[in-house]
Length: 84
Image (cartoon, rainbow, N blue to C red; front, side):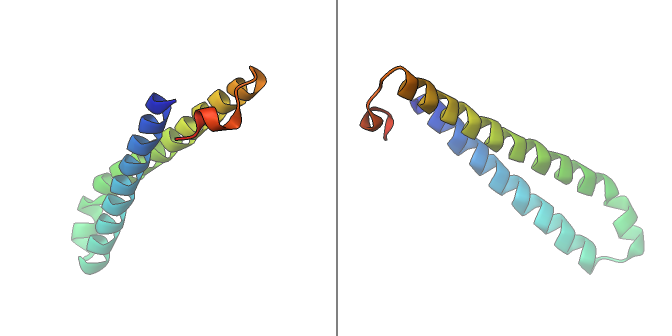
């Protein structure tokens, strides 16, 4: 359980970093001129891919945690056993 919670926490931190990076690149593009924007296209694509991967990691970590909780419930674990 603790490992899954750590995995979820790490995925959420990674998502926040990816989101901040994407926002910073977007703001930089708005400030720059057209020539600089075309040069930033790769950075934008990379940031978008990182954001998508990070979001998927969060979803997968949450699903794994929910699956563990469901399996514990089915096995007869008391609700408080899995609480942090």
